[in-house]
Length: 508
Image 1 (spheres, rainbow, N blue to C red):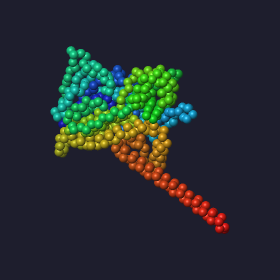
Image 2: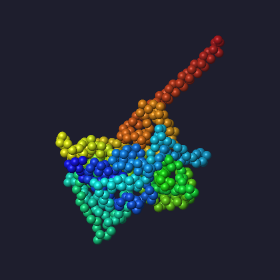
Image 3: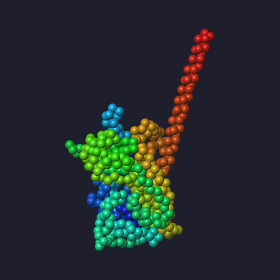
Image 4: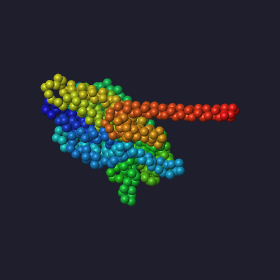
């Protein structure tokens, strides 16, 4: 890159999305500075206090493809080496005879799979790549306190106490140590700011002062709490299959378990606030009984009653937020990515994957608008080209983010109850059968399109709706044909009876 096309890029947020955005910018020759509210995220003590164990996430094609294009040698191999393949869902329950059962449901008819990944390990790999680059500077314990997106200046408070809490449950360590030890504020000029600082984004807050930003925030009536299944005491192996995402569907409730490399499982209870309240006020016996009834096999087989109750009491009960907004940018100065732009509920495992895909699509759009090209033939300035690229990015990404937000909400219903429905199983079987035997028709399940392809989310929504209409029409024609057949048989039987009566009356 020539000197005339080099930009000074500020990235707010050093999580997976912010770190990947910094890698993309640095790989194109930009001078990059990353500012993170918390201490170095590679330090185990920096893990958010709300998460008592490692946070396991689902990594799928969109996230993998985005890291593949980060121009960091060895990054993807290092990340994938620390993942666990999950080939499908393992549905747990109790049959009518009272016996525990588990049923495997493959994610994909062609054997494709998603991967369980530790968020901290993934983040560490990305930050390690950034640290090796001479045109990147990492600044931890810096809080974005102000931004002028017309003059392109941002202000950061340099914290003396590391920020270790999750944004949804902050504590008092966000304030200075004392009134005599105030945080130092610095001003930083930039050409382009990328906000990737999560659902409670400071970058989005300041963007709202400049862009006419439409904003929608929704808390669903579901809380979540983390649990932990330890390895077997006898041989330190996995208690249940490590190659599945385990689900205990409970109608309005759900308990899931995702494998970890240390042979444990990170588990999550999702339930209405009223259920959490009832567990909080119940006796130990009623607490265990409720879990046994709703999530058969969890306690005492996988988690002891004492551990189960202790984890429920000690771990926070957190809300689930869904955010939609647009536009994602202001002029050529700023853009927000990931949860800052479109926080979603976790039921499709696409939150991180969509955020990483944001990065790839943003920089593909910048490239297609010649932002990094230096040529006397270009009629517009780099700043104007960048503004055109951000306009195009918002136009493309807004409907896709809205689509995956909606799909994630609907997938909660599928996971907590639909996976046991005969209608769900029939449609899944039909779509996979058509895909295997008539691939030219382009039929795939919604899950396959979302998790194993890079098709736009909005296109996925339209394609699946079309398949659904065809299936309903086919079922309607089938029922009509069956009705016609039954009517024909009925008429034939009536005709035969009439002929028999006539024959008996008049003889042969």
